[in-house]
Length: 115
Length: 114
Image (cartoon, rainbow over all chains, first blue to last red):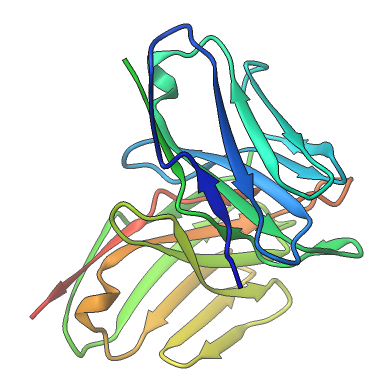
């Protein structure tokens, strides 16, 4: 049973560039969430996707956008990269059951470095 | 706004019990979670508790929830060197649409002394 998989594992970009990160949810899950974890900090919620729509968003600018595909996989896009965007980006998946969600399971993350 | 607080470090001797504490502010929290993160890895779900429960036990792990004081603790019995990691407390609060982005603390580094 494959868990949450993310690609790539590491990425180096320069300021002003754009980046796309990818996530495949755990088998049987239909909801994908993205988090940013800066060094020495806890993860910060970026947004959550369900039924191909953004359902909730944290305190992140519009430079951060996402997409969910019919097979439940998801992409995180970040435009106009800043040095402060350097972080570990974590994807989590869960299964929505009625109004409540099952616990979120995390992938190993993509480490993004901005030069 | 929502906030989750944890102590940054905890040092225990191998074989002793570890107790990691967490406080949160959102009274509408529905689930509270403990995740474990080892160096260079993602987050591993350890256990979780629904907000209408007081206690949950799962093998060496015991979670206690004091909803009145908004205090959550994780007890690890018979702590081993493999338990050395960062432990994150997190809460979920449902938005009107049913989404549940998690709010995390900064994590507690558990250090095991031989």
